Image 1 (tube, helix red, strand yellow):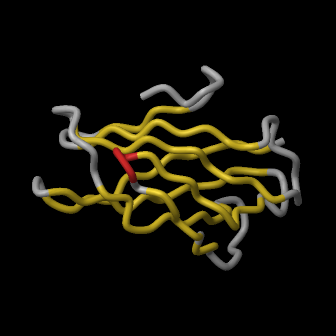
Image 2: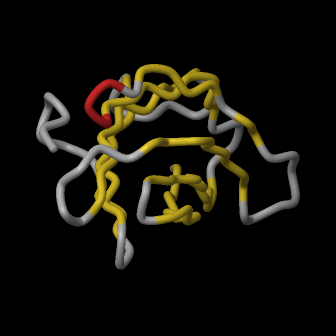
Image 3: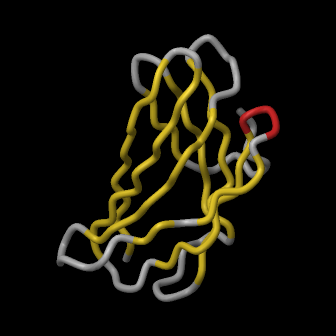
Amino acid sequence: MDLGHGTGWVVFSERYMIAFRPDPMPIEVGEPVSLIMNVCTKSGEAAELVKVGAERLDEKAPAQDLKVSGGIDGRYRVDGLSFLAPGRWEIEFDVRSVEGSEELTHEIIVK
């Protein structure tokens, strides 16, 4: 699950593992950010990234639905993300494979 720069996060459940990093790094408030991602089952098979969303948890704000592209061998790029203000953000990943569908989340604190 090499992301190319050795920095990022890993989210996992009983069935899935997601490794991702922001591009560019570091994250700047208000600037567009893409996510470079690898998505697979725990057994190492590529999984499908169906949808990604993000929302700020500190204050109610509209959720961001993001554009998912790629998918070859479980590698994806997600565009359209912007952390509009500092605070706690939750990124939501909808993943599926022959093992079933699942929603995974990860919280990021943006300063």
